[in-house]
Amino acid sequence: MRPAHRNATPGMVTAVDRGRYTCVVGDDERIVVAITARELGRKAVVVGDRVDLVGDVSGQEGSLARIVRVHPRTSVLRRTADDDDPVERVIVANASHLMIVTSIADPEPRPRLIDRCLVAAYDAGMTPLLCLTKSDLGDPAELRRRYAPLDVPTVATSLDDDARAELQGTLRDRTTVLVGHSGVGKSTLVNSLVPGSDRAIGEVNVVTGRGRHTSSSAVALQLPQGGWVIDTPGIRSFGLAHVDPGAFIEAFPDLAAETERCPRGCTHSSAESECALDDAVAERRLDGERVESYRRLLASRERQSGD
Ligand SMILES: Nc1nc2c(ncn2[C@@H]2O[C@H](COP(=O)(O)OP(=O)(O)OP(=O)(O)O)[C@@H](O)[C@H]2O)c(=O)[nH]1
Ligand SMILES: [Zn+2]
Image 1 (tube, rainbow, N blue to C red):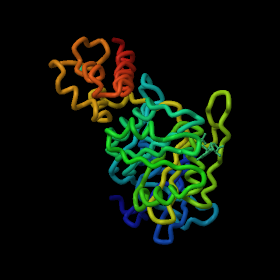
Image 2 (image 1 turned 45 degrees about the vertical axis):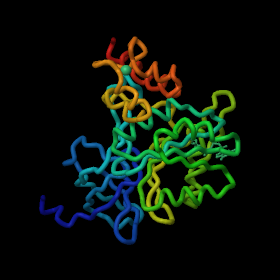
Image 3 (image 1 turned 90 degrees about the vertical axis):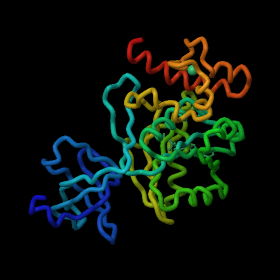
Image 4 (image 1 turned 30 degrees about the vertical axis):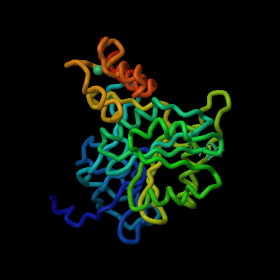
């Protein structure tokens, strides 16, 4: 350790904006703005990172600290812009849970996006949760049924119910990243969980079903009852170029059991003629849409590798 850094102050990064890192520091939880020290090189510092700070850590108006160290991460949530994008981005570090936020309607649920987020959660070593918003606009039963075989905890919410209390209990004393398609009501959720957080509420575009782009990077917010939620910008897709396709099956435990009957070397893609997944669908042990979703993920990878 360089002597100058022996007295470095620990903090946690809560927001990143154009090279400025907002950190929460000390028992008084003061907000300190920092830049990264040159010695960190090109190492990315992301929301959720535990860092050591030197320089002016007073947090006073106009003060600027320097991040000199990033502590080892307990989890790393990654995403690629597209499946064929070689550039992977670390979105959030050190979160334990990934809450996939989906609306029952307006915009319509997108199970394939949910499945991608599940793959990303398992890849990151995070525990997934499903939050079904706008349950006043439709019946969450269908989605619950589809994801029931996965043992992923599911909470349904609406604007005016006490499901929020259930959600608060679920999120207490954990660090949970919220991901979801634009317009599903993530900001609305965060505002109700963290009073005063003032996340901008977008209007859903009637034509495209997409929300207005209101936020551009992840932000960590402290929950009044303890714990953190990390809000991320609305996404349209969740690129998985960084995940080994062999690991996709982890997000499909309902399918995994059936694939044990496959012939040796079966890739389970739709091109396989003896894949046990087809029998399982034909014999109604599996939901055809689950198999379809898994195979789409595999196919998106084959295209990428040029097969
Ligand atoms: N009916 C109904 N509408 C909701 C509910 N939650 C949010 N909305 C509405 O859905 C629209 C989008 O909500 P936001 O909270 O901005 O959605 P978002 O996911 O943060 O969207 P982005 O900011 O684009 O990422 C707003 O008009 C909300 O008022 C709900 O439970 N029920
Ligand atoms: Zn197979």
